[in-house]
Structure formats: structure tokens, C-alpha cells
Image (cartoon, rainbow, N blue to C red; front, side):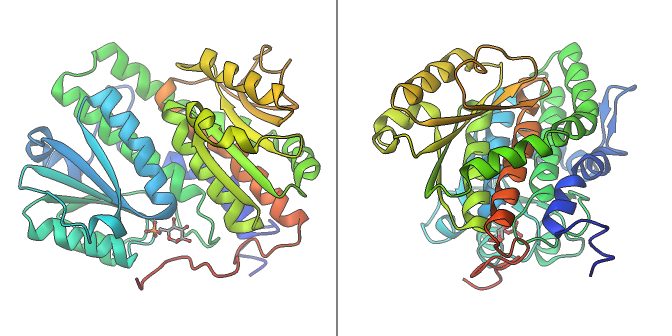
Length: 369
Ligand code: G6P
């Protein structure tokens, strides 16, 4: 096992550090930057189904569901296709309205999750076209779907999903960009710009990983907190959910993720000097609004850990800690902002002496209801 861990203390840390290569493996051969082209057999062969779709319904569980939420923002913003994201377990039991013009995308790292499997069987029965985004090659879900695209992340052993999440977002971004181009929803130059930015992501993930020692200090400072709040907006709202999930899964600290603007409808009541609040505040879209959320937390004495764009000075002057990530095009920021949140929960769990790779009560893949 020590050999399999490749010198890392845990599989989770190894898998966090594998992300630059995993993302490269995901887009290799599919994204041809010089030709300004995305080639994905599963999408190319079924392009009409995608282009004629009234909407896309994404079904998934856990971290994969969070990747689906990120995809919703990306698909709607870039490809202008309406998207609904559903917990597979809810979808399968609520008599959903699905028809033959719907495209259902099932996201599953293992390709074995029982609820996701049941959701796609139901969607197929109702005549929908079902597309799988799985990591495990030949898995049940990858076989049950009409077509699909593998994430090519390599084996993920740690129960807390890391590289599966970033590679799922990579695949879904490629699909969104490809459909946007085919529909004429994106200009050629904007399409090309997104490809070039995606091509730079692995290098930028490496830069984000370089904050590891700094993040360890942040972890040490807040490891004894009883609760954490995670806030983000837009493309980074699902990253806040995922950050909170990572922390609770492996450290057993109660954590909640919220869209930053919803803070005033409840979570703000919890904020006091003991509450660390992780805020994703990259210099994009809603930056000013997130800054005002930070001020609201500050005035209630909450502790602020802000994930910011490299070079940001404004948030630095307000936050207790800032963690920088490189700049990129807004739709791709989740691929970077999620990295420090993975490391933060990893270090807190290690410092608390928890079993990081095999947290209590959790399974890598949930094959029963
Ligand atoms: C379990 C795992 C999670 C995973 C979820 C969905 O809860 O512990 O890490 O996100 O199942 O799994 P899937 O294999 O379908 O992505």
C-alpha cells in the first residue's frame, strides 16, 4: 500500500496532487487547441440529440451532484441550454416529467451508485437519451447509458472524492463548449479563448497546490472549530457546497455550504467570533457583492478565510487569511478554487487524527439504497 501511495501519507493527498495530470488526461485527444476543435465520440455521434434537446437533466449523488451543479452554470452560461440538476435518489421516486426530447446526463465516479443507476433506467424507459460521465471504465452505469465520456482520472481510492470532481467538471466543460460552438452560442474567438484557458488549468492547479504549507497553517488555526460555513456565488456556489462536504466527510466537523447572498436568510444568525467562514471571492462576476458579504461577516466578528484571485489586495485587508489561486476565465474558476478547499479539509482531518482515506460510516461507492 505504501508503494501505491507513491510517497504520500494518504491516498487522498496523492489524488489531490494528481489533479494536474488527471485534468490533462481528461482533455488529451479531445481538445485540439490549435485546430480550435473539441472531439468527443459520444457527443459527436449523438450531436443532433443534444442540439434538439429541450433541456438537459443531470442526475447524480454526492460530490458528483456538485459537479453537476457546476455544469448547470457552465451549460446555461456558455451553451444557453436549460439544465436541471437532480439528486438521483429524489428524481427516481418523484414521478418526474421526462420525454424523448430530454437528454439525461448521469455523473458517477464509480459508475455503480444504485440511485443513479435507477434514475437512468427510469429515464430510458421514458424515452430520454441518457449520457454517462463515469470514471470507472466498463462500470454498470457506463454500460447502461446510450453513450458517454469517461473522465480518465485514474483510480480514486480515497473515499472523499477529489480528482473525480475536477475531471468531471473538465468533461462537462468540454461538452458545454462543444455544444455552444455547434449551436453558434459562442463566438469563435471566445471558444478559442476558453480552450486556451482550459489548456492552462493543469499548470494553474499546480500553482494552487503550492499554497499547501500556508493552508496547513490555516488548518492548524481552525482545526478545533465546531462549525464551518462555506460561501460562494455563481459558478463557485457549488464549490462552497463541495468544500463543506469535504470537511464534514473526513474531519466530522459540521459544515454548511451556502450561496453567499442567502447568508442573510439564516446562516448569519450563527456567525460569532468562533465561526470560521470560508468565502470564495475570486475577482469575477459577483466580486463586489461577495466583498460586501465579507464585510457583513466581519462586522459580526466571524473569522474569514478567503479564496481570492492572485494579487487581490481588497479582500486581504479584511480577511483573517487569504489563499490565492491563479486567474482564469470565470466558468473554469471552480477547477482552481476547489483545490485549497480539498487541502484545508485534508489537513484539518489529519491534525484531528481522523482516518482520512476511510472515514467512518462512508463507502466509496454506494451500491445499495
Ligand atoms: C459516495 C462517495 C462519494 C461520491 C458519491 C457518489 O457517497 O463517498 O465520494 O461522491 O458516493 O458516487 P459516484 O461514484 O456515483 O460518483
